Image (cartoon, rainbow, N blue to C red; front, top):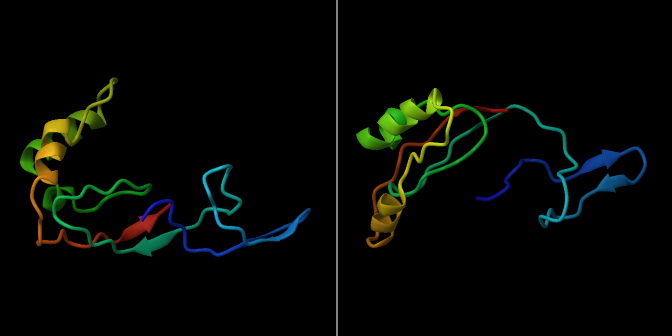
Length: 106
């Protein structure tokens, strides 16, 4: 799931219907909206999105949650998931799933 947005096309005053696939070569031509979504991913995945996650304690390890809380007030970037954690997670196949997230995305 990358650059997902649940609208197919937009109508522009000067170009009419814009229904071309977004290929990363420009800006989105769509207006933003509020959506409630549920995303279920393998337990070793981390999802980044706009909006507000409602279940960080369930989807992050205690160490990652601590770094997340630290980052909320930090003036410098804080890695929530370290390179070592990401590298270790790639070495095994995980069959468990993280709980779905459901909150408006704005």
